[in-house]
Image 1 (cartoon, helix red, strand yellow):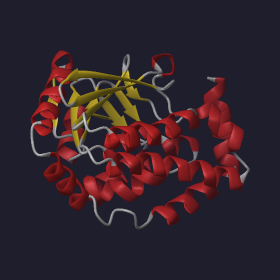
Image 2 (cartoon, rainbow, N blue to C red; image 1 turned 30 degrees about the vertical axis):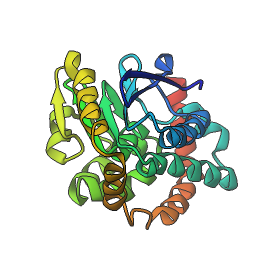
Image 3 (cartoon, rainbow, N blue to C red; image 1 turned 90 degrees about the vertical axis):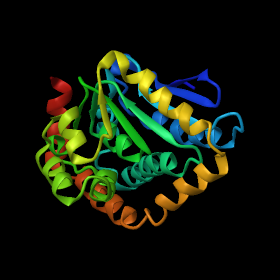
Length: 247
């Protein structure tokens, strides 16, 4: 895969690394297609019982690749297809039969925070930062505003989604987005330790437990796709994307 590296550092554990460090692991259409395929492969592999998801370099993911926004802005049909792909990709992490532990190693903005919401458990480095940056380019975090209230509650979701504010790992832990904050150098080993614990348990019990916790999580997605698609067509969005790319 072009956007991910996959290794097996411990028995039963897959380490998945987002591998686009030169772009701060920004998410383009290929990223989302590969994430769907990847989670399917993890769930179908009997040798994999838990996975750790992290990013290469200094970012978990800086979010959507802004350059790709310019290509689809104004074409509502293309925007809808893109948003459905995005939603399917994040949902595939939730639907993956094996637990996925997020090891957030740095910048997790926009789609990076939304991907964090999709993980089953999240460990974060002390240097990690989180944000819904979509409002700064005239958008809303479509998947995040649906899933955020279930994970963080409405108040924290509103604070992040309506301000674009960047928060640190400690604040993310207080919000319920992160379960444990660790020194940067200890992050990956801690996440692999937890994955190893999960991998040692009866796999069917873990799969059923995850499925029950995540049941009924689809409502609201169709409405969020439509609302976000409309924002892609606004002049303000196009202007802010142009300004961002010029910087």
